Length: 110
Figure 1: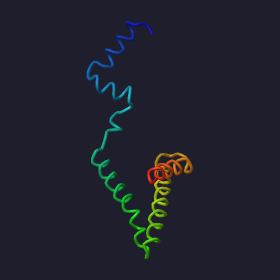
Figure 2: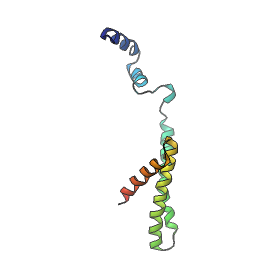
Figure 3: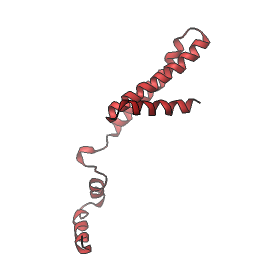
């Protein structure tokens, strides 16, 4: 494209609001993809609360040793469940996402 034509197109696209043009053309944001901070905050609050409570299910075991094993097992199962739910939400294969979530959590445990 010749430089004068490119400058003319850029001036036409950025004439009103350069930030809006950048968001629309470069990043793909528009009216249909506006941020919803309250919805995002509520979803984060719920997911972090549930995710943090999962290991406490292991506390239902009777003895101290069984409790420790139950906490680890319940946490690993919770990581696998989080991987499955993440894969469904992202539309990827279950195995890949489940493994990624499981190994990320496993590395943090040790």
